[in-house]
Length: 77
Image (cartoon, rainbow, N blue to C red; front, side):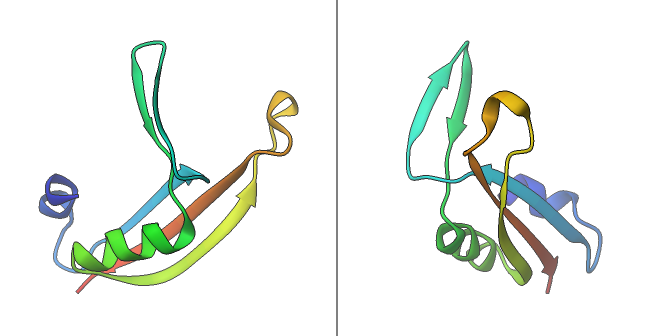
């Protein structure tokens, strides 16, 4: 988050999405960190972002039905 904050202009906006959950894993040499809506809010607020919106959505890919995502939009204070 620290590096992302440096990239945001003055009052820039950041969107992020995470698979919903509370686990970490490595799959095919890629690191994954699942998040809850509340965890995302805390992460953004600690980084100095005002949370504009946080919401859940379902994965629309055919083989991923039933998987949920946490989406969050924050604005630099």
